Length: 209
Length: 209
DNA sequence: ACCACAATACCCTAAAAGGGGGATAAAAAT
DNA sequence: ATTTTTATCCCCCTTTTAGGGTATTGTGGT
Image (cartoon, rainbow over all chains, first blue to last red):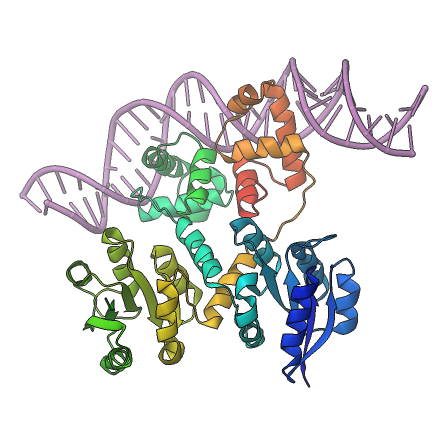
């Protein structure tokens, strides 16, 4: 049984180019191609594609919105996003909404077939510049300053950050309320803050919890 | 000028295999290969490699620690991690500490050369299963529940989450402390919490700020 | 005209948290 | 052997939050 593919792109030339490209291979069957995603839910329901190639910039509803709608009704279809932009906003939104891969149009022609194989085998094809963007995003996720909190202090800060009151922390850890207070005072000193919220917001933002 | 490559892997067979593989290509020059990364700082300083292939599991210091040390002295070398594990912990730590790519050993032999090209041209080579892991991690990042907070309430919650006291929020927004309190009460109702920390931790964790 | 809602403001009381001390015992570091 | 750090506990007093009300205004919808 061939792999069923559904294509969305408002650029007719590109769309047809992709169709032709894929029709050269008998392991693929292009079950549909559309210039907009207004009826994406019905189309996906009826055509049951294995792989969806989705342009991001389209009239009517955007590719990202389309992905959200698809994911609401189908979690198994593999979705490859296609775009000319490699800016963070689009990429993150698309990937967070449930896309499986993300190709720049300029890489599409030589990498699409390979990418289809890749999503089908459980991978996540991305154009190199996109992979790099994602990774740099992650590095940026950890500035990591060391405030030299003791083990106990970290424990208490963690508990505080999940929303526990001093009282609760005390009974959780089987220590007196006063002890919790003492630890908290030291934590405030070390983090240079003066209240719970500041401490918690600092802890969560700098992910030292 | 050939691309200078430095290799760390405690498995001698694999390490020599990689060396041979790369020496077949005259555009690469393996400037060193080591079974552990104890002297990584000195080695990198002296050999000035363009690309470093770094095993994660090594005696002495781990690949992740080695990457941190390298990044402290050199931001331009491209680092490709090599590992047998594809668990989240290792991957995130490595990427966050500054690695540029992440290959599973089982993919290494056929993808290493390609991956070296990729890091050199600004990409981020990853084994498919790793790319998928990272992406699923991102999707997991946004559960998004709608608590129907009003614009003003969101504003106040946001301010609260950055560590501001009621007083500060009041003077920031030029409203009375009591009004802030009223808003906060409603926020608590809507989020179903009973204190600042709970609200802030919920807001930050579910990133509704 | 009436209703729902968001935003504003005030009152009272009780609970929780913050800031300043001081103190002790055990473990770790010097 | 002595000092430092860590974890534990207690006191006093002030400020901030939480929970319970009630009330006024303007806006948008019916």
